[in-house]
Length: 292
Ligand SMILES: *[C@@H]1O[C@H](CO)[C@@H](O)[C@H](O)[C@H]1NC(C)=O
Ligand SMILES: *[C@@H]1O[C@H](CO)[C@@H](O)[C@H](O)[C@H]1NC(C)=O
Image 1 (cartoon, protein in one colour):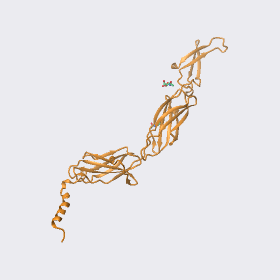
Image 2 (image 1 turned 30 degrees about the horizontal axis):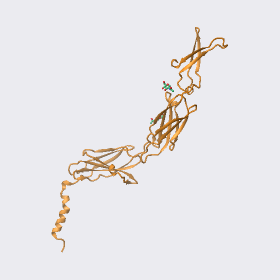
Image 3 (image 1 turned 90 degrees about the horizontal axis):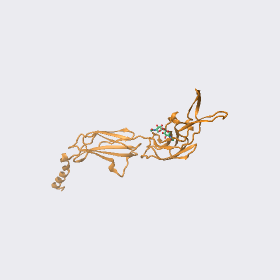
């Protein structure tokens, strides 16, 4: 009874056949595989060549998975998570622009003409939080164009990546061009607000409008715009008026009105000299502000 010897031999040959073709083996696993963060959201992978190339190495495949609760997230477009490196001498690979606050898991294998080799161990990293992108200013307008001048600023929430830390606040600055930074007006509003008003702007001034978003990780870059307030006639008089009489001449000197009362660039001053008893003609002289 039992199996006919010929059939046994046939099965034996079938089992042995793949193992006999030694030169058709795939590479063993790459060694010393390491994944390390090079910034909050970039990673550098490094490795050494497999011990057994089993033929000419052609390159590597790098696999990366987003992890959730310790498991790879099955993504629809799974091709994106495999990178082919057609360079057998390559010993590193860098990925940037990963999502913040996210665990990623990596592994790789080498390939030769016979196919994909054995996998390295998995290595994981958890990316860090990042500050938000700059918001986009949608409009800057004047709610009131006479004193107290009121500007209205509206913006759009910046794009946020998956897992990005939520925006806590927006900061708005109005910087009068040509004046020191100590004249900056600023306001902070809640992270859910997308507009605000700032009042008490000077007239006749070009303002830089800056808006930044802030989260727990820090401030975004500034979005910038400008707005000009309308010019008005000066509200304040020249200050420090002095005069000196010499050789039948009167020399009058002064300083411009305070910044907040100029309501624009002063273009000229008028000096008037009249006798107290109005017995003689008045002298009037226009002085261009260029010559102050
Ligand atoms: C005031 O003068 C400065 C400097 O010349 C100029 O940049 C600015 O545009 C002027 N402002 C107005 C409202 O004309
Ligand atoms: C944005 O503008 C404000 C006000 O001028 C400044 O303090 C801040 O440093 C600016 N932020 C950046 C990232 O340049």
